[in-house]
Length: 129
Image (cartoon, rainbow, N blue to C red; front, side, top):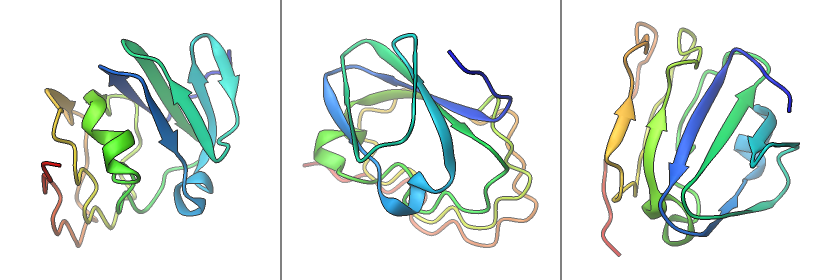
């Protein structure tokens, strides 16, 4: 399993499919899931009660809609997101970052730096489907 110092951890309560869009796939270097290191392909089948670690090569400037893809199959099943090891110092845009995260119980932003962020529109907009 590969390791990096710049990653986000997501914990899922139910089986689902994580669909990577071309936009967020470009920012991801690799994914650690179930003891395996994977490249960000178009889709990843995730089992319940598991952790997904999304690793980045470099600090990213935008989390816009990063977690809001395919809401009914993905984000309404995430109960925890941990940003403890995420380099947030270069973030500029966080529009709709947590859109649709209706099952979210824990969000660790304790190390977040938002000095450069200029837009947080609809940051925590919840859609109940």
